[in-house]
Length: 260
Image (cartoon, rainbow, N blue to C red; front, side):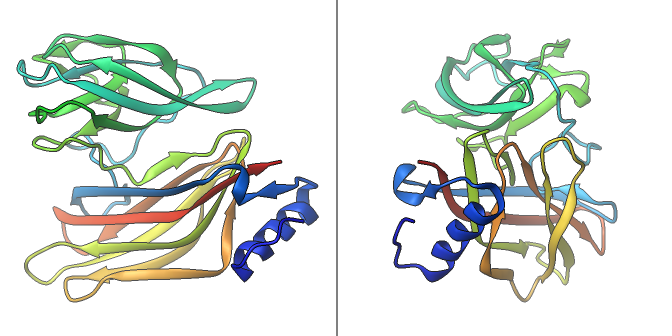
């Protein structure tokens, strides 16, 4: 087995081998992963911590590669962006990175259609104005999809990167989660309950752990042992607040490892 200095990482590697027979190594991937998100409209119904269209509580996950299109609500957005996500074939997710050049409020078709889209990042020298949308091809009005259920990711106005505390593991990757955190960003007294939820392949989301955050203090949990996320899993942070329109942010941190 691979020798590592971190006891809990070594323990996770041993558990993966014991449970699945997979021999994995952090040296074979060399990639840490932080998935951070923000939702300014958390209320008394559970919602994912990501930028969503008004009235939408969570992304509608697909069973096919139906995410094909980008557009901006600003005609001035013509930057090159990097798009990260996963394709789906035979029940297996494959991680894909591609580039696209925005064309203002006009539709831009992705080179590779996706089943999951986890990040859009501006790689140009000019700031985005946005919002910028990633979605299944549908009708748009001034660059904004009219069917909000087709939207899977949004770069908020004035930002150059998506804020989405939701991601997916590929068919070859384990995500060893070391910690997660959340903040309630309301200026006046506010409170939110935040859950880390995981859906393994072919299953629904289940809660792994729940913490709280309030105006006076961050909620944070350090995993020991580390939380092992299996390949082909969906992971997200969700929140419920004590009042409507409560801004909540949060992130999940860990390292990706894969079989030798």
